[in-house]
Structure formats: structure tokens, C-alpha cells
Length: 157
Image (cartoon, rainbow, N blue to C red; front, side, top):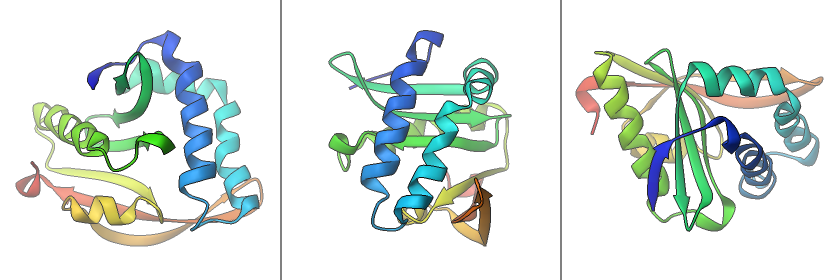
């Protein structure tokens, strides 16, 4: 596995991974209308362009295929965190999180936060994050439940 900083030309493959992961990995916690509403944000090109140009974006790849990506916004917020459906439970998420935490430390960040899906909640809890609150997000008139989570730097890897 190779971890590297994302490039503009990675966006198409990143969006595909995002949509596919939501529809396959998250299908046990969210219904079809929720999955469609959530994944529809892949069509917001401005949001994705902003992410790639303003955030610290890491790509995990195996044999030149993107198998995961994670982003750090403003040194203290994990914005995107996705691992390809066919590469779950292979240490990719752990490695991405470790690298994101290292980057956050370089900003002297005291608390790392994220808005985490029901699907990802257990992974983040196992890695020292705690739930601050449950949230209801509305996307395309559909309610999506997620969790505001945080991890203080004394608990980082």
C-alpha cells in the first residue's frame, strides 16, 4: 500500500470510491433514499474542488488503484474518510488515520473532530474518539443520522 497526497486528477476516482462505498458499506445502517441523498453530494463539483485545493488530502493506493482517502480541514477536522468496499479491514483506515493525526499534530491541534456516519462510528470509537452528540442532517429533504465526535491529542497515536 502506498499513501500519498492527492492530486487534482484523482478526483474522478475519489468520487467513484465515495459513491460506491456509501452504497455498499453503509447499506445496513441507512435506507436507499438516505444512501442516494448522501452520495448525491459527489455531484457538487465546487465542494470537491475546494476540498482538494484547501484541505490536506491523503490517498491510499494499491497497484495504482485508489483504495481509500482521508482529508484534514483546517488542521483539526476530518472531513472525508472512506475506504473502498473491497479493501475493508486491511489496515487502510488505521494507516490513513495515523497519518491524519500526525498532520494535525504538526498544527499543534488539541482536539480533532469529525462528523461520523453510523457505519464509521465504531471504527472511530476504537481509535479513541468519543461521541459529542448525535446529529440529524437534512440532505435533499432526507434525514441522515451521524455523530459529532472528538479526540483530544493526549489520546492520539
